[in-house]
Length: 247
Image (cartoon, rainbow, N blue to C red; front, side):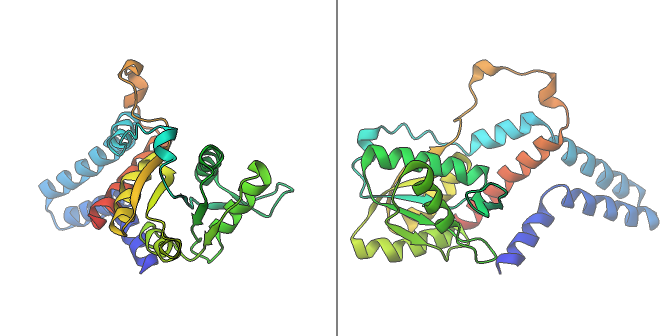
């Protein structure tokens, strides 16, 4: 089911959906449906352009951000910190064969700061699709680089929903109901929804830059197609699809 969901999501998003449109356009042209062929061709071009420009990326990512506006005093009222896994990579560094990727490393850093400031127990949750424990690697880096202890490691969850459900199984034994949830700002809306549905009171601790300030303005490069913008747009759209699916 996990792999099937990934395949369907990939087919829905660009550039796969554009390739499907263009293939359909060729088939329509072959059977002399010229108007429909032109329509699907230009639809593909429009979709590819819209979702490969930085302007769309900025707007989509801003739409996922809810400003937390919480203080350290607010966070100190929680009973535990829950850190969500964000991915691993192979490592040529001497300290380990596996390391947190950029997304997970930012989460680790913020969790370390919050733990030092609040002295709350920490739960890390996450497993890679191949079964490797993201949580264990993150716990190792927290201890190695920040001298932060991990109270609980949950290393079965492969999805955000499983993060919430499996964390609940562990934390309800410790009578923990109010948590600080650490994840990226683009992921927080869906993660918060699922953890609240699991029965937690959630104090969101988002990693990210927040909503783009209006003072940044616009320039021509915001409307020039770029490969990085295409990736960023698909990332945000995938997150919205996941949220609507759970909603």
